[in-house]
Image (tube, rainbow, N blue to C red; front, side):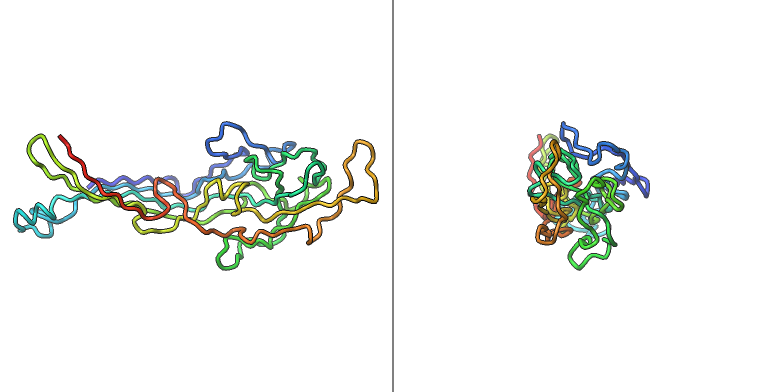
Length: 288
């Protein structure tokens, strides 16, 4: 039996002020470019706790084994000499950044930031804005990861970045998950030079849904961490001064669309070399 177990430190803290864009060759946009260190926090798509295990072991059947040790040559040829292999993982959740998107914030934007590139997540899906934390987001309704009512709208004034309660990058921690693969195989020796290997590889053997979203659903272009979208309205009764943008009016409920899927998951995600659903591949190999 061969068993390999990868055990990182019980609590892995990987922090930075950078943006995790996967393998993108372009750097992302810092939300507050005047104070980039304000986003120094846990990196995205990294788990604080993670265990990965690999193993290969002989099944205890056939001659000389614990079970069927006195079997005939025919029975031993059928049930003896089989090996099993497995790999699996268990990990805690990864970080996500809650955000609002703005439907008509160009060229007039909250905070007079004068740039439609403002991006709450940093993966080029703006304009988007960080919410203000107003309560506990951990008391989530059934079927959701977080409580959406704990997040308020961003400021439309000059305190857009400095407003009390503006959330940091990767404030939210998503669901933990686990998965395992299993393989069964045996080699039948024909002669000294030739053999046939038969077996099956079962991906995601427990058919367990792995609910840790990838960058598509969990990033700034997905719905998992999106609180909703809003529109802005300008004061049409007071002309703006030369060189200034029009005065924005407070964001009223009729200008807001709540995302009903915030913190809710509908599908499984491939990760750690394990498929999102159970699949079986039959193996047949002739070696000479």
